[in-house]
Structures are given as structure tokens and as C-alpha cells.
Length: 208
Image 1 (cartoon, one colour):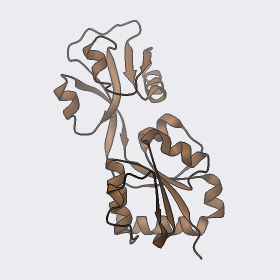
Image 2 (cartoon, helix red, strand yellow):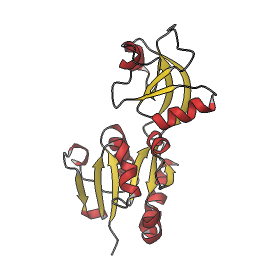
Image 3 (tube, helix red, strand yellow):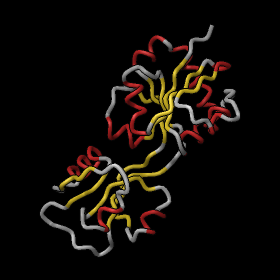
Image 4 (tube, one colour):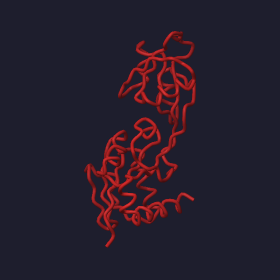
């Protein structure tokens, strides 16, 4: 009998694109799968159990073994640095991390303030650039920070650039590309290797 696998996924764009990818790989997910408001969804036909979590929490569930597998953005993996293995770049939900700010704004030359929900990524990036900055951690509406004088610049995810443009901000520096990755708990990788290897093969085939 096939052993059940628990998969942590974030709701929203990644969830929809990942569900589509799993269907293309031959997995039978119910038609109402993406519309469910449940936080735990059992798909008995495939021996899958899905945990729906906030994007930043997916890697935490996988690290602690609550989930065997997870689908998480590379931005989360860079920021959280969790003890998980990265198995596949699923090449979905493409975007990138960037530095942005108001055009022609006077920047504090001593220690510019940078607002972000990625403090570890931002700190590492500016250190590599040889810049000393003050990091201000926010959890939402990062674009607001330069508009009200809280920060000189921001570090955030950019997809189409529309949000930056609508708020009068411009992209200044490109930090790293971001796509969604299939991650695994190290212990699950050893004890459930057959089922996990099967998923990796199936997904790899439809991506190729």
C-alpha cells in the first residue's frame, strides 16, 4: 500500500499553479481543490494530505516534519534558511527580488533606511555591496515606507512592476530571480524515498 505523503502549500498564485502542475503530472486532484476553504485537504485517491499555510510558514512545517514535502518560493528559502532539501525548481510563479525607491529621492548617505519583509536577504545583499544600511522589517504594504518617509529604499518581490509604478516607485537594483521550489524534510526523504522519488520523476517529466 502506498504511504501517505503530506504536502505543505501556500494559497494563492503558487497554489493554483502547483495544482495545475500536479494534474499535468497525472495526479487526480478534485475539481473543487483550488476553491476549498479548508486548511487540511485529504486526497485519498492519491494518498496525499495537503496543508495550506502562509507562504513564509511552508518551510517551517517541512523542517519540523509536520509535512513531508512543501512548495515554497525561493524568496522564502533564502530568507528563512530552514533545514530542508531543495529537490526541484518547479519553474512556476516567476518573479524576482529587487531594490526600489522614489526616483531622484535624496538618500541618506550615512546609513540609508531599507524597509522589507526580507531582513536577512536585504542585510546579506547590502553587505555584499559594501553598503551599511538600517533595516526596517515590515509585514505588508512595503511600498508605503518611502512614501511616508519611513525608509529611503525597499527590498521586495517584483512580478509585473505594476505596484511599484502605481505608487511612484522605480526599480533600482535586481537582487535574485524567484520561482517556486519543491522541498522535502530530510527524514522523510530517507524513510519515504519511493513515494517522493515518484513525485519528483512525474513533475520532472511534465516540466521537460
